[in-house]
Every structure is written in C-alpha cells, then in structure tokens.
Image (cartoon, rainbow, N blue to C red; front, top):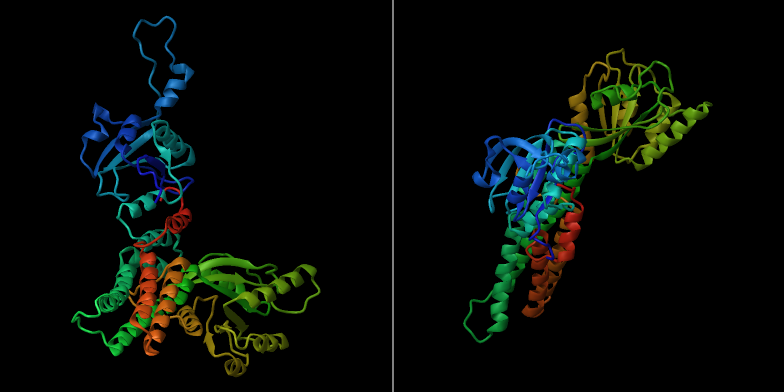
Length: 481
C-alpha cells in the first residue's frame, strides 16, 4: 500500500508531559542496530547479543551530540591517536528487545524506557534519530502491524478506540473488538453470503452440470439471516456510540434546588460552587462522569428564573440554550418547598424530552407537590444529594429514560463511522438481493448484489480495502501508536 517498510521508524510511545517513565519505540529492519548505536550496557553487552523478549539495563548516549560538543574536541597538546571525550549520557534506560515476527508490528522492535518528562524523552528520541531512525508518522506502528498481518483493520481501529475510551463500557467494547469479536461476527455474516454466492456462481457458470440447486426459499432464508445480523450490528452501534462518546446531559432547575450539590456528587469533587445565596452559578459548568458504565457529559446551569442581574440573566439564557441541545435533562426540584410558577413552567417545557426528575433534599420535611411532577414526568426519583442518598436510583432511572441497556458480554460492536458505513452498505446490497430474489430476478443479478455485500464486509476488516481508506484510518492515530 505504498508503505516504505524498509525504513526503521521511531517515536515516543508514551504521553507527553511529566511522568514516571517514557518509552521510545523503534521498529524496522535496523531497529536493533540503531538501538545499539545509542545504548550502552555495563560490561559491554549489546542488544544484538541478547535473545528476543529480554531486557538490558544501561544508558542512552547521543553520539552526534558527543561529536558536536566543543568540550569533546581533542586538545591541541594531546598525543597522537587520542579520541575525543565520549558524550555525556542522556539518561539511564532499560532496553527491551522484541524479535520479528513476534512483535506488535511484526518487525524487529526495541523499546527504550527512560525517565518521564519532555526534556529527557525528547533528547532520547533525538539520539535515536541521529543514529539513523526515521520519525514515525501518526499510527505508523499500528499500520505496519496491519500490513504485516498482525492485526485486521477493525482490530487496528479498536486500538485507537481503546486508547480514547473514557468509560468502562467503551474500554470493554474496544477490547472485545481488539480480541476479534467483531471480526468473528463479520466472518459469520460473510460466510453465509459466500456460501450462497458459490452456489449461484456454480449454477450460472455451469448450467448444464448436475450441481445441487439452491432453491429460492433457501436463498431468501440465507439473505434474511444476513440482514438480521447486519441490523443487529447497526442498532448496537447507536447505543455503543452513546456509551463511548458520552450523553450530553444538563442539570437544570430553579435556584437553590441543589443542582451544584448534585454536580459535585456526580463529579466526585467540588466542581461547582455551592452557597445558600440564589444565583451563585452564573455560567455553564461542564464535567464528564461515569455512572455504572454510562458516560455523561454533564452541564450544571444557572437557576431558571427571571432576574434583574445582568450577569445572572446571561447565565439563564445559556442554561436554556443548553437544554435545547441536551439528550438528557436532570430536572432538579427542592422537595422541602412548594413548586414555584417557574418550576411548573419548567416541567411543561421539558415534556416529551428524555427527563429524570429529581426530588432533592429528601432529608428535609417534604412540602412539594410530588404528584404533579409524577403526572407530567415519567421518571421521578427521590434523593438527598447533600447526604449522598439515592445515587443508585438515579443511575437506574437515567438508563431507563434513555432506553440504554448494556451490551451483552462478548457482543460485537462497531467502533467507528467507517465500520458503520461498511455494514450499512452491506445491508443495502442485501436488501436489493432479497428484493431481486423475491421478484424472480435471474441468479446472476442476485449474485451481483451479494458480491457487493461481501465486498463491503471485507472492506470493514481490511481484507479488501483501498490504500486511500487505510491511510485515512491511520491518519487519525496518535504518533507513537
């Protein structure tokens, strides 16, 4: 696919910034040679000498830096044959060797682990580049793994999904895809299609031979089964996407009903300022939290009321705008006081939306009209955010209001728009094949649609994919992966 596999690439494989460790990953035909140019172990043992999956402790040196450092030049009064002083060590390091083909990329790989920090890891990477490696592009290590048959394209995409997962459900789904659950499901769908294609092709190519006929009823059954499986993947994608990317959620209600206290409870920290003074929250406060596998993109908003305060009124406008874009509304009411006109107006405004009404401050004597709220909002729970009571009931009500159920353990999930488009393309072709079969079209017309469906599924796993598509997939990866 145009990839120059003869080069040896290198990059920092750990996040930028201060940390306990940084890893410089080197992959390619000269990975060991490049690493040996910069790494020195006590006793002189080299990386080339040790077997794969073995580690050496030593130091990283930048040979080019040593040669260019004026302090390392040979003094004028030095004797003949005296060499310049060696370069100063960049850092202590552990070199870990992976021998091809049993490595992540399928090539020889050496990982140099040094202390974390941008300065140290940057100097270590420069030393490796000075020694002959080429800077790796985005996703180039994983792309080489794909090109060397170590990963399918869907598994490669799952790597990035796993890295970017913000919740347990998203991480679990990505890991299952990485382990081949999706590939196996796609293989099952495609196996049925290919079986039908083989029978149709034999009938079309050898009409005079005594080949067992595939009846139209059997063909229809095969196509419908493939359609059912494809539809399941497409339906799971929408639920999975919400679990992966988070659900835009707004906490709204009148001033001083406990919205900020609820926000802090869900966030697990003092994210919003809480006071007894109405109108404390003036702007939208945002935080992403996870509740029992549900990822919520929370927005705590200003109290909904008419106000003469110019700054607060801007906050109220922003709160109303946030409500319009929310997929879930946590409508908070103070159960210790009667409903105000603005509360009733708010209840009417959110009817028909995905709403969970929270009767807060249940630790105080109740005075609100709970029956009115229950008559107008389907999901209502009681809690005391201050005393951390009712969180489990809130989590269950959120899942019910959104109609989200956790995927079955081991269930295959699509983890990106490209994969979704591939299955949708396969579904469209299968629908056309089904219609053609039911209408009595010739088998070669049906076979064309089935071949299109199979091609779409093979494109998902990377078994039949263009260079442009592969390049687009890996362009979204981070450097070093």
